[in-house]
Image (cartoon, rainbow over all chains, first blue to last red; front, side, top):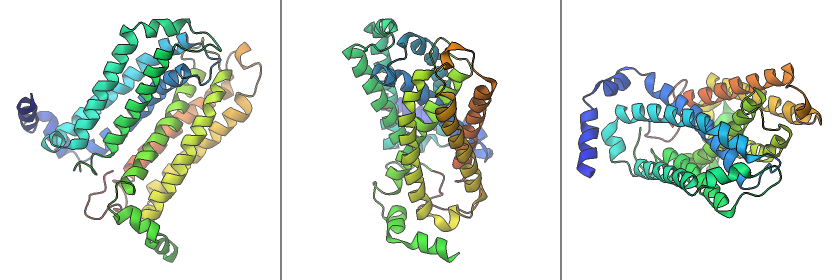
Amino acid sequence: MYTRLEHFSQWLKTTGPHFFVVHNAWVVPACQTLHFFGLALLFGMVGMLDLRMLGMAKRLPIAPINRATPPWAFVGFILNLITGFLLYAGDPVQYFHNVAFRWKMLFVVLAGLNLAAFLLTGMSRKVNTIGPGEDAPRLAKFIAATSLFLWIGVMYWGRMLPFIGSAF
Amino acid sequence: MPFLQWLEGLSLSVWIREGGSIWGYPTILFLHTVGLGFLAGLSVAMDMRILGVASRLPLIPFAKFFRLMWLGFWVNAISGLLLLMADATTKAINPVFYIKMGFTLVAVIVLIFLRRRFFNDPMLDQKPVSGRGQAMAVISLICWAGAITAGRLMAYIGPVAGLPGTSNHF
């Protein structure tokens, strides 16, 4: 797995996306800007659902939030996947060896597993029955708190790319 | 400018910029990002509700999110001031910085309007959203996008600032 990813990163340096990023000075700042748009959209949507499950703005029923936020959070996530891929392609070997980048990816995967837990434990259906003023089940609160922790962690490792790692 | 040189020369500024501590520049920058996530993120989600997304959600309870948005604002005002101090002679003469401040100022004024006027209407959920409310939501979305873009581009346009020996593209 390790050598495969390393080979992939080296191979990426010979591909179109890599040359597109390195030959156009505007691509990196544009991708970073869009990456922050995606951050605000993803974190705003996920955060709103998580905070309501934790008991903030309790007079909101959960079902409409739980139905409306996922598609927008997904848009933010895909935007960041694409811009993140381009940033990676611009300097793949550096990112591959970057400790902060590995932690960031681990946290993204954990956030995905946490989402899977939300769906598979039936909590995502159960919270739809939580009306105005009602408390979410304890497990849903735990998943919500984990989600906030993990996404803030993703921001932390992203910011640490040049400091703990050696990006830029 | 002597004032900016004085500000940048303060021991706190030097420590943030050159101290090499993870608690200096890196952590302050991280806090600035988390503040963005809460302030702009929740604000965007609220704007989209005002513009008709999830229209079955009552609007009035959204007012409860303001406390967290103001917390995000103050975290970013303080962290932003510290980052500005650390690079005062370069960032404070960068026109992009003032564009960012302009967008941020309008976005915050819109937030204050929404909190004081829009959400204070007890009949808010009994009628369609006013045109003025929708206009405020659109202005808010544009201003956050503008503030984020300008903030990001400060690292690319204007005089180079930041940690010595790095290319400053944080």
